[in-house]
Amino acid sequence: MCAIAGIAGNTARSEIVRQALEASEHRGPDHRQVWESQRVVLGHNRLAIIGLNPEANQPMVDTRAGLCITFNGEIYNWEELRAELCEEFEPVTQRSDTEVILMAYRKWGRDFVNHLDGMFAFALYDQTREELILARDRFGEKPLFYTRLDDGSLAFASEVKALVRSGIVTPEVNTDTLYHYLTMLTPEPGQSFFKAVRKLEAGHTLVLDMAQQEPAATIQAYWDIAEVLNTQEAATFEDILARGDEGVRDSVITRSRADAGLAVALSAGLDSSLIATLSQATRPPGSTNGIHVNAVDGEARFVEKDVVTQFAQDLDINLLLESVTVDAYMEAFHELSAWLLDCPVIYPHMVLVWILARTLSEKDIKVLLLGDGGDELGAYRSYFKALDQFNTFESDPDTPDAVIRQCVYKGELISRRHCHFMREPVKEKFWRGPTPARETYDIMQAYMNEIDIPGEEGFARKILNLEYKVRIPELITPIADYAAMAHGVEARNPLLAHGLIASLLPTPFRVRNHGRLPKAWIYKLGEKYLPGYLTEQPKRGFGRDFWAPVSARLTQMCEAELLEKPARITDFIEKKFIQKTIEKQKLKGTLMSQLFILYAIEKWLANVASLQDSTHSRPV
Image (cartoon, rainbow, N blue to C red; front, side):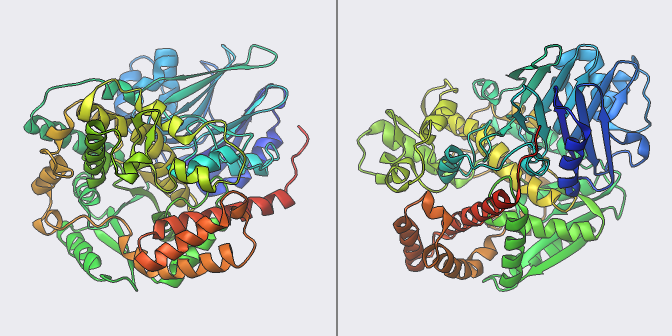
């Protein structure tokens, strides 16, 4: 809902924070404010969604308790918490989820984050204890970057761009991150694409002890999905369906709370359709919007649009249709590439979220509900393929299957699902950059080995641990957050509710999926709430109709800009690998996403180089 920035320590100066806020105004155009004390400066750009009046502006100060907070996100259970906490503390505002965080801290101390159901990144300063607390939500829906300065001061912001534009950070590429990105499409959790900048991990807090002349930081996890996944509960399919039904309904209800306009992204898919149905039932008539984007020059261009149109009519929600040509898609891609600094354009449908958010912003709609997280709660077909590979490897570690052999590390199988592009043996052959401090497979294996359950069930949970600790917080949620917040639109994910996840994932994987039926319990739930023309159609995937028309254009651009001209990406990847990928795409037509990744990295490297030429660190 906002952008936050701040600095703590001897370098704390308000002009630095103001420059950081100017660079992130897109995240919160409704109000800007800076609060400062002797050694702490906190800043905030507000996107007003809950409590639209000025009393909810930030940074918010509780003078009675000596607290100040700058907060980005939403606390979805704020009304319930407020009712409980107002029995002990007198509120100052009439309507604010930000104030609830301050009250929760007064009630529960550092344990307060465990009482918050929401997506959040915030900095809370306790003047009495002289402590600054940074916190990030359990699934990393909201980003939070920080850097330590030479004198021990700590600067933080919602985007790396803000740290760079303020002069705090020099934009020097972290080549280790680029190496890992070529496999996982994410940095190593806790790292960023820039050497001087770290990213607070999802589900973690950082406490800065300001009582010391050189503040000391302590980082710790307050919630760990591995603990959930290491818990085994017997359950029937009917038990799972009942838990899922209650959990999804509760999550959609709380995530539909907004005093600003709200829309649901409709793709004719199961997850978004469920969210739209349940959200619309809880909101005032005429207040729910649906938005759909379709490819004008796609192969099946009218089928999905017709289904969405029929569904919107049946549900009686307002439908916004965006018909996009290849030219418009590529124009949006280049706009996003030029604007984005924190990372490359991650995946093709990030461009579509950018287009959706731009349309919503023009309609003064500030909230967008998305269906991300459904595949992990159920299971997509790639999960079953991964289990087949695991069983093959377990029965024959010397299997002739080349794909499986490329995913073996120190005698254990790595999740092929999370090798999005270049597997480790391929990078060993074609990587030209500096040798990384750690292999990507080593990172992946460490997360997988946090799960101590054996066999096929254990391997499924190992995959899920990677999903919720790496892929979701560092790949899935950034796609939505960056693309939507660029236009002042907040993306919410009802299927990323920790209560819902904690109630379902301890149950047996095969029971949740009726053996090998993808997303079985979610489809069964869909039969309860949705018309048959939605539940009976095959899964297509968001933006799939764009892949074929964009593919030919992308192939041409890669040839022209990565092969025929000097390309920055060839400092890191052998040119012959790029040429080989283009040739395979021409022959088989199955490597569009790989070409997209290569091209997006090249554009990002050019963006960083341009910034390096024009930006100099300010003296601090």
